[in-house]
Image (cartoon, rainbow, N blue to C red; front, side, top):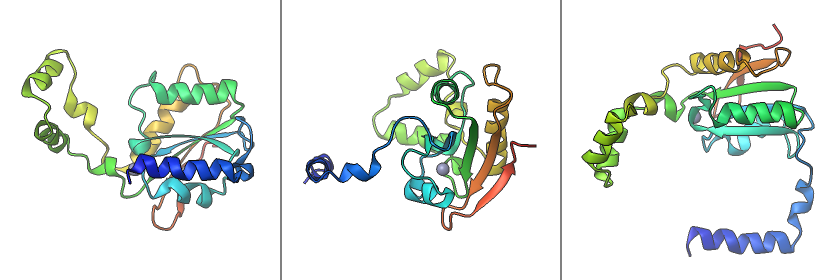
Length: 186
Ligand SMILES: [Zn+2]
């Protein structure tokens, strides 16, 4: 059975048995908080449990590495929407140890692209259009530094209200233990 079929079969049962009832809430975060974290599989359930969040408590934005690639990209836009439209009053950036984005080798990724059918022509066209794939695919070396950097971009963003505390944490993807990198109240 395909994965999609499996999902749809489960979903039919889920809705039929009204298993959604325990998750019902609204779009406004009860804890008035928005979190930016990483898409890592180990954090899917661990992150909410380790921080004591249930459905309805927080807005969660995720990408590879909790990286803010552009101050006017979709991550910052989501944060802005959470703050201005959805009642979030604090922001926490949660990076994690052993992040896939900390060991990124752009050259290796580009090699994989070639092996999977992306032509030299395409890569060359991008390069000549001013797109530096190496920079674009580059991750970070130190997770704490990356978290502090993301916090700094948010804190200093021209459209972010100054009174919004922005915290930075690093979570252990094995134990869920948190370390504070930036305390936004200070
Ligand atoms: Zn990660």
